[in-house]
Image (tube, rainbow, N blue to C red; front, side, top):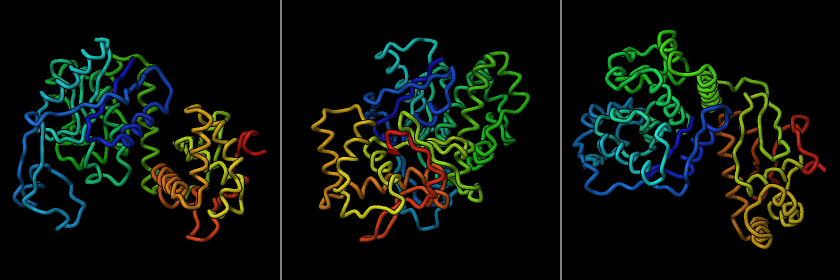
Length: 377
């Protein structure tokens, strides 16, 4: 069963890719696909402009559980919203253009608010279409946005297999939050409960079992549990945990096997730099990074299959150039990847750090590092 994920133009590509990566991280029969080149645009006549005169009107209308301090927003404040009809038309346009099978899902991820102020919904006329509002999650939960967005994707998939129509869903969802995936969350802050439980109540499970195979259900539950655990790490809820080994497999993928096998996603160039630093417990001065050019050529060549040899060498040459900020940018992105995955406190043990002019190193005890022979030698 395939779920096509598409994004609107204003949604950050990196965030969108992170959502897809989270959903694809757990193997199983539900397939999540995306087309990086398909960007959904909204015409001006598809967006309604609304003006909020003060903070009270803003909070009341959008029902945010505001954690931002008063004065963080300036009023009057303008905001654009679009209709459900427009959102679902975008899904149908994508279906027609890309000849998507009628039995496959199309879910649109967008930062543009909708006029009913829902987190997500399926289309009443074609419940294989759906949208997820992919902005403002920081108002409700302290974790990277890709986790709740990915959760809403799997939630829409399960909504379709719980209820036969949108009307049935409206009548039977849990008006009071109980920590089930089918909690309605009229008060948006109630979303926190179901995100932290990642559960399906027995009543809803009985309905799903009549519409979905055990294999599909198991896969959906495994995805939900994976998201729940990763959110807990990212929120620093598991900071007392013993440190995990870091495992680089033969495909040069980076995993933390003792932290629910969380994968740390890095670009090939970021990964090459990280693997180089793992080889040197005492660290490397940025000013002497050029001395490791040949090693980086070898590591990067084993990781990346994109581009010709000359282009790949140019990227490494730029990386080790003391006058370039390429390496500093990569180190910053590596740090962010670990913090997003396991929270700030635990991440300090795994990313590259060191002050300006100081040696840069990864402090993790190398007895916890498992490298492939092609890197460790």
